[in-house]
Length: 323
Image: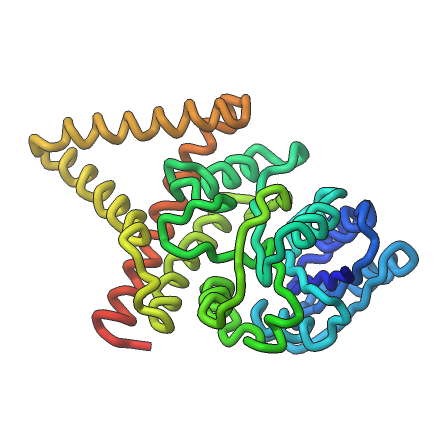
């Protein structure tokens, strides 16, 4: 099988260098790489050119449209039997393509997703962010897992593969940001294609490098869930309200303490238990007290940012019907 690896890029030349370096180490060699510069100010032309002798790589430049339509641009130009999408802030293990090829030959999937994890070289904050994005105490542990409290399994675009037949039948992304990968996988499901997780096909995902950037990303994710609801109302599940309810509970706890309400002691107790659960679980997962402390912060940032973004667009787009 010949794979086409499609990587949208926007103002991240150093990230693409590290990603391409990891692709040169692949044990499975039947693949091409398409790097699509999406209207960047800081382009990566020189960096990509440096891999011309070690990778079958093509570099494209186009006006800024967002990652969804940029992936479509890659689909239109890809030569592969199967398209693989990575975010530019990923590092790919050397046996990734070999694992995917063997898995598809053993049990075919028209579309697949894979998990993500923190690389040993990542900073403590990056490892804490990775923990909070995959923790059972924040996301329920459903990312990179076959279980999905939200219903069908929806591959995420930082690590996603689609067959050429899917592209030719369903087409590409119809929204370019804000939940575009989930919207796409819902349409692929509806078209009758087989979608699943390849749990061994993991990538190392850097994500955002500081608390403020992570807050903005999680806030955007919360808003994206409402965007998906506008296309597919039935895809809004009870689990998607949890960060918003958590945020409201935190606000209530703060108010209860300020005014000395009787429920303040119970709220404080529950909050302490939750913090301790995160701390000790993160410590066990990462073998680091420092990362465990940081994980408390990233977990609260993730839940409150997502919750506020979710409530913002729920009120604006659903209740007030503004666009």
